Each structure stands twice: as structure tokens, then as C-alpha cells.
Amino acid sequence: MKKKPDTTLSPLYTYHEGMNWNPVEKVIFERRSIRVFKKKEVPDSLIKRILEAGRFAPSAGNCQPWKFVVIKDPQVIEQMERDTIRITRLLMWFIDYERGPVRRILLGTPVRLLTRLVPNMLHPIPFNLLQRIASGSVPVYHNAPVIILLLVDKRGVGTPSLDAGICGQNMVLAAHSLGLGTCWIGMITLLMKMKKWRKRFGVTYPFTLDDCLILGWPRGDYDGEIGREVQLVEWIREGSPQSKTTERQGE
Amino acid sequence: MANLSILDKAKIPNYFRSKHVRTGLVIFDPALCTGCGICVSICPAGAITMNSDTPGERKKIPELVQLFHDKDILACMACGDCTAACPGDAILIKRGYNTKYYFKKISQVPDFAFPRKY
Ligand SMILES: Cc1cc2nc3c(=O)[nH]c(=O)nc-3n(C[C@H](O)[C@H](O)[C@H](O)COP(=O)(O)O)c2cc1C
Ligand code: SF4
Ligand code: SF4
Image 1 (cartoon, protein in one colour):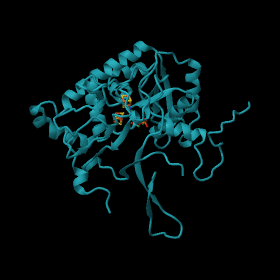
Image 2 (cartoon, each protein chain N blue to C red):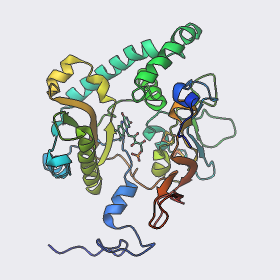
Image 3 (cartoon, chains in turn red, brown):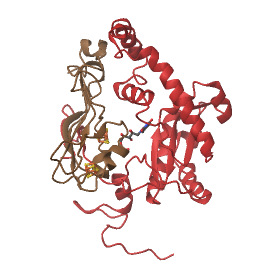
């Protein structure tokens, strides 16, 4: 097939300093998590095309330690939303130490001890999101028409969840390059506390589920470049084995 | 030099005190904002609301929601999604998310930069 010439983008496989983004880079930099979707259906063929990008992701030992579940039934998604909110409310009842002075005194210290045990779960950002979900201010699955569950086979080589992350991001980038919007939703871990849902989705040994992708047609044009914090990168270069230099990446 | 001091490693910040947590912060340019409300609808943290009508104002302008009595604790995590979605280019990330102690950022600095064409 003939390639369409695109004058605004540099071709693939070439590099000179300061050149424009190529199409792959453009998708990487302009992808934003999308949380507002049109009601319009996403055709099965398009979902399969995206799954294909996941199927061909690299993995340790080519183990492919993943399993996909595609959810397209709005009723199921609605039930997932309801149950995730329910669990979030229950959890926050035990750990939200800001609601009222009594809770602050009683819960403050134990919750911070608990945070030390599960710091990733109770990091301030998800903690805040849990509060917003519990109070009904923010939805969990954002009324997406499609959810792809990314189950991880624990028996994979090395660190299977890392492989699954790579696989998922492959699908995310493919989806955005095709005009769809996506968002990773880690909050599904809460739903996985319910046996009913684990059984329903086949999240039983050897599978686990920590993340899913929501996708659909974005309602509006929300992709675009954003600013990010400058990253401190350490360089170890030839000739100065003892010293490393720190360089500010991005500015 | 160690990445985190012993105190940093041991202490979990109090999430509701701005002495411990520096939340994200975005600012809205009233001259560029059209009051369309897109930022309110896309913010993952529900951090933005349209401010109530002030007499004499022609349009509503978004503002960050104040969640708790510590008014410097906001829901914004500085994801930047609103800055990309805003059709008027009216939003700027002013400050990133960071905490003291256990979750302190080590490999980033507070300055923001767009993707740079090296
Ligand atoms: C593993 C993972 C889990 C995430 N979970 C959620 C989630 O539960 N809810 C949500 O709104 N966003 C979630 N996100 C999206 C992040 O908030 C988002 O990627 C981040 O704010 C950066 O914004 P950007 O994706 O637009 O660049 C998740 C992202 C990742 C990678
Ligand atoms: S998206 Fe931009 S123009 Fe629209 S209300 Fe928000 S700041 Fe104003
Ligand atoms: S930067 Fe992200 S979290 Fe903060 S107000 Fe904008 S969309 Fe919301």
C-alpha cells in the first residue's frame, strides 16, 4: 500500500537534532488519559485490532503472561461501577480520618501505620481519589463503552505484572493512533476484593487483576501535549568512571 | 547522599495538612477562558468547579474545589489533562504534587517542561 505523505511529520527511521516528532512520537506525546466518552459503539473489529497490539508486546522469555477480557455490556459496566463505589465507601468508612474530630483522633495514627504497610495502595493520590469516589464526586469507569481487563498470569517469567503493563501500553498507544481514547483504571483492584466479580471475570489462580483499560470515542478533543516535572537523569559516561553527572531532562 | 533520611522513611505525612502535602495547583486565565466547563468535566480528581456567579461578571470562571478546612489542600494532582483539553489554552500548571517524608519525590524537580525536541 502506498504511504500517505505527511509534510508536518518527519519520516520514521531518521534522526537529526531538533527535528519534528515522527508519527509514533506524536502519539506518545499527545496521548492523554480520556475520561469522557461518546455513547457511540466501538466496533468489534477495532477492539480486535487493539488487542493485536497487546498480543505482540514484548515479554520476559516471550512468556506472554496475560489474558484479556473484553467487556462491552453497559449493564455489566454499570454494576461494576455500583459495586466499586460500594466497596470504596466501606473502605473509606474505616480509613478516612478527616471526617470529624473523633475519627481524626481515633483513626489518624492507625491509618498512617497501615499506610506504611501498603504504601502503594494508600499513597495520598489514590487516597484522595477514593475519597472523591466515595463522596460521589468522581466516577470510577467514566461511563466508558468498553473495558479491557488485563489479567496477569502469576506463573510468568520474572515480573509478569511488568509484562502486562507493557502489553497494556502497547494497546493504549495503538488505540490513540486510531482515534480512540483510553484510560488505565487501577481502582478495579477494589472490585477484585469481591469474590463474585473475581469468579465472573475468571480472576482465579493463576490469574490476578490489578488494572484495566477503559476505551471509547472521546467526546471532544482532549489529547495534546502537557508539561511534566523536569527529571533528574544521571549519566555515567566513558572516561570518568568515578563521577556521574546529573542532567535536567526536559528543559 | 542517602535518598531519604531516617525520619523521611519512617514518617507517613498527614494527607490533610498542607505542611505535609503540597497538592497540585493550576491557574485559570480569566482573559482566555470562555467558561465552557470542559476542564470541570474531564478532571480525574473532580478538582475543578465553576465558581458561583459573582455580580458584575459576565461569565463563570472555573476554580479549584476546596475540600477540607486546610484551604491549601486541593484535589489537583497536577496531571495536566485539563491544560491539554482546554480549547482556550487558559490553564497553566503552577505547581506539581509532592509530599514531605515517606512519599517525597526524589528524582524530579518542581519545574515543569513540555516535551522537548532534542
Ligand atoms: C497503572 C495505572 C492506573 C491508573 N488508574 C487510574 C484510575 O483508577 N483512575 C483514573 O482516573 N486514572 C487512572 N490512571 C491514569 C493516570 O491518572 C494518568 O495516566 C496520569 O494522571 C497522567 O495523565 P495522562 O495519562 O493524561 O498523561 C492510571 C494510570 C496508570 C498507569
Ligand atoms: S476548559 Fe478552558 S475555557 Fe473551558 S472553562 Fe475550563 S479554563 Fe475555561
Ligand atoms: S491538573 Fe489534572 S487534577 Fe489538576 S485540575 Fe487539571 S485535570 Fe484536574
